[in-house]
Length: 451
Image (cartoon, rainbow, N blue to C red; front, side, top):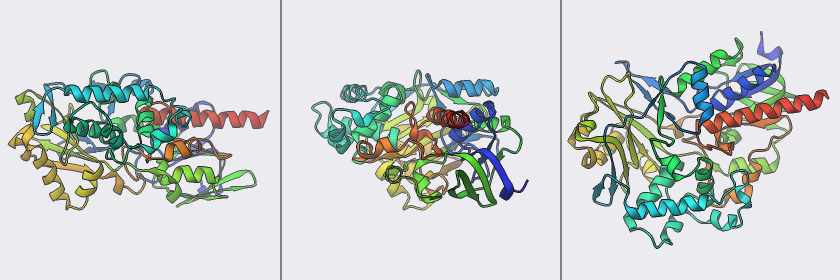
């Protein structure tokens, strides 16, 4: 059918986990749905790359863990297996010049103190915290500077664990309120940072992308349309008209499920979204992390009794993990660069950037780290349809001022994505929950209109 002559109950813009979850819920409720995706694939910020030797590497999100019940259920429903993160040895914490196998006591006390602060934040209304304005004006670096606990190197490590590892920014950029909300939404520092029992506990066979593809296949034939970016949405006589590269569709409702930070630049709305909504979206900043998978003939770090996990108080790389998958012909060490270091790394050529990453790891993993046979990097900030990873967040002063205006629908236009989630914000789990909430809101609107 020619898209220019088509009418559908609901159009979902974006085929990441939020959009797919919304579409699945709508279809299950008997509501007609079309999903429009700008890319040539589904999955959004989940993307698995297959190397020539058959090894798969996740260049996007890759882990799930306890309490992420929706993701486990989706994997099981579609026959996709999960497996635990390899645990073949000890982690390494580089704190100043010291290489430790356990977090130092000062760092633990600082993390516990921040965890206690996060526990006071209501994830449904963080702006209502009695100290919201003050906490939002305070950066994590400023908060750390006022603590009596911890050495300067321990404070630097904690800053990179929290601001970098969770929000992909430097400690001097992260709002304490925004970060505390994020920690609370993920059930605490321990859950967010840990492997066993935490957010990095398990991986998905074939990558999270395999689950996204399975959800897409489960939708009615022809309802997921790739390579069809949406450039405008307008309301005409109580009908939402969606303009795409292939024509137009008319719908009763629309769910915008693209990364929240890209909404203002990607889609033109007529009439404009409410000013409060535009201000909230405009204050979001996409993540600036860089993820590089270094591929080796074998996971050599295990020979030295190391797990592949490392965290660094300084240097190019903030953290690493064992990225080896069951199908890997060799070993994969995954390195993450965040914040100021990621900005600086982008000024180098691709080869020089990989060299800088590798050299920064030589004192932790030994000279063998230089013997990689492949390096796979995807800079999500350079992805037109994403605008950065892991997700977008507010800088200092944003959440307390305009955060409450981010989530609400604008009439017949609803919004979904991990940035809108109250629980597991920034994760696939949050995206799925947000998509289902948007679908439920559409269904409720339709019932109210029919009453």
